[in-house]
Length: 126
Image 1 (cartoon, rainbow, N blue to C red):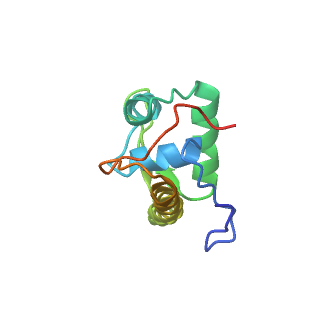
Image 2 (tube, rainbow, N blue to C red):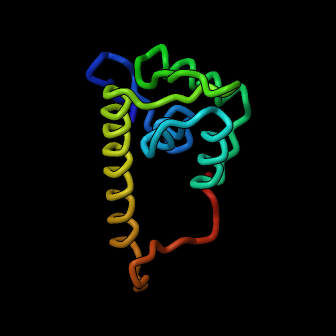
């Protein structure tokens, strides 16, 4: 999860990382800041504040992972660049490996049939 991208940039694969959430949102098409925040809240339940959202947008733009489009009235939409699509793909692959390993280990460790669901104790992480 703390690997490096092909461009020598540290990658962040945390599923709640604002950059990862923004890239995921933009994978379905260009959006301006407010639309990004609403989309992200819709698919994750995470509400990004303006500082987190626009700070991450600035970092992603500086890294060449997103680019602004012509402003639509007061709103400036952003879209993924090819490098952004690649970075998101690497992040998704990293998360998939973790999910697959966790799922396998939980199922092997559980003596109870789960019908395809991951058994949970009802407690959060320590």
